[in-house]
Amino acid sequence: MIKNNELKSEIENLFISPLKQIIDKNGKIMHMLKNDFDLFSSFGEIYFSISNPGVIKGWHKHKKSTSNLAVIHGFVKLVLFDGRIKSKTKDKVQILNLSEINYYLITIPPGVWYSFKNISKEKTIIANCSTLKYDEKECLKKRINDPSIPYFWDN
Image (tube, rainbow, N blue to C red):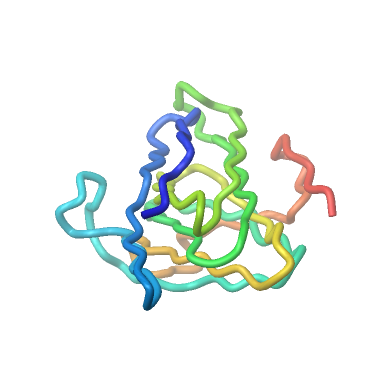
C-alpha cells in the first residue's frame, strides 16, 4: 500500500483526504469516493480530465457544485484561490502537488477557483466526481493569468 505525505487545507471548507490504494502483483485498486464517506453529499456526474505535458487548465469556479478531484495518473500542480467574499480565508492561495503516489481526494467547495498544470512528461488523468451535472451557467471561467487571481502561471 502507498502512504501519502501529510497535506493540510489552508482554505475554509476545502478538504484534503488521503486515499487508499491496494496494490498487488496484478496491478492496483485506487479508491476515490464512497457514498458512506463523510464528505459525500450527492452525485451529479463523474468525468476525467486528460492533459498533455505542460498544459495548464483553468481557472474554474462553481457557484453551487462541489468538485471532488483525484489524480489517478501522472503529476499535477493544483492551485486553488479563495475568492469568496464571506470566507475566513478570502484571497488565500494554496498549491498542492498531487499524483497517484501523493494520492488524495481534494474536495473543492463552491466559490473556490482552481486551475492545474500537468507537471509530468506524460499525459495526466484527473477524476472529478461533482455533486451536480455540468451546467455552463453554473461554472465560471477565467483566463490562466487573469489579473484578478493573485497567482501567475509560468510556462
